[in-house]
Structure formats: structure tokens, C-alpha cells
Length: 272
Image (tube, rainbow, N blue to C red; front, side):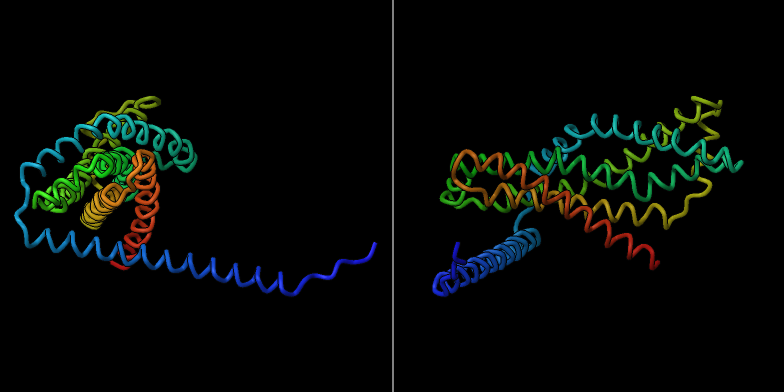
């Protein structure tokens, strides 16, 4: 069978089509970057120049705390239990079981508490913000606010963003306390140790440098969750399917950004 000779005109057209597709993708990428920068500039400009909606802020704080505290309680206890149960056998082999409370406390407060709390809130709060604002966009409620000379950025986005930035650190501290309590329960599965002595041993090895960076890091985690969730919902499409897309995209994007922010925070903390 004779070998088919490729048509040079077809090859040139395919290469031109591929080049055009790459250029279009790059164009869309830079357009999205520009939209994000514009969105952030508008949010922060309104945050410091317009009247702050304090009642809406309190409402969002309550919703964030009320929607998350149960799940964080269960997760915190389980994390403390699992970390203690898995760490104890290795420490027993080295005769260092006495450092177990301090080791678990440092692990939870410095890393596991902030990250797990943020990821839970990204799934619970970020998706809720994305779905709520996107449904308002679909039903043209945001358009009605703009027509009636009401600033939707100031009323819808800023209270949610600030509430997330304030509540995530508080929920992180709560998760740390619950995780340490769960660790105490894990210790008492094999040993008998009073809660007072366990807490004393846990905090004996803690320093200010262990707690302060974790709180600051959780503040940025909350800001990321609030900004991403509101951005995805506020800029959703017009169809009803955009509600699900916005909620899912808010969770995925905020979770990825949380890991990146955590990596940056760890590098900065390591320099201190």
C-alpha cells in the first residue's frame, strides 16, 4: 500500500488553528487576571471609603459561626484523638511519652488547627457565599440593587469578606482547644491523666512564636475564603446552572489558594 504523503496546506492550517487556540487561551487568562485585580481594587476601595454595613456584618458573623461550629467540633476532637493514638506508640518505644501533650499541642496550634478549620470553612462558607450571590445574580437582585442606586459591593461583599476574616481566626482558636481536648481523651484510652495536668504539660512547651503566626495566618485564610466565595458568586453567569458552578468553583479555588497561602506563611514563619 503506497505511503500517504501529508498535505502541507492541511498541516499549515492545523498549526495556525493551534496557535490561534493558544493565543485565545492566553487572552482569556489575562482577562481573568485583570478582572480579579479590578474586583480587589473595588472591594478595598469601598472598604475604606464607604459606610460599613455593621448589621449585615454581624449577621454574616453569626451565620459563619453557627454553620461551622458543629462540624469543626467533631473534626477537632477526631484530629486530636487520631494524632494522639498514632503518635503514642512511637513515643513509648523511645521512652518519651511525657512529651506527647506538648507535641500534639504544637502540631495542632501551629498547623493542623488553622489549615483544617480553613478547609472546612472553604467547603461550608465559601460554597454558601458563591451559591447565595450567584442565585441573586441569576434572579437579577444584584441588578435591581444597582438600578436603585444601592452599592452591592458595599452591602453584599464587604460584610461577608470582613466577617470571614474575623470569624476564621476565632473558629481556629476554638478548633485548637477542641483538638487538645480530643488529645486528652486519646491519652486516657491507655493511661490516666487529669485534664489540668495535660493542659499544663501541653502549654509548657508552647511559645508566643507558635501561637501568633497561626492566628495571623488564619486571618488571611478567612480573607481568601471571603474574597473568593464572593467573587465567584458575584461574577456568576445568568443561567441557573451557574449557581452550582459558582459554588463548586469557590470551594476548589479557595482550597487551592489556602494551601498556597499556608506554604508562604510557613516560609515566613521559618525566617522568624
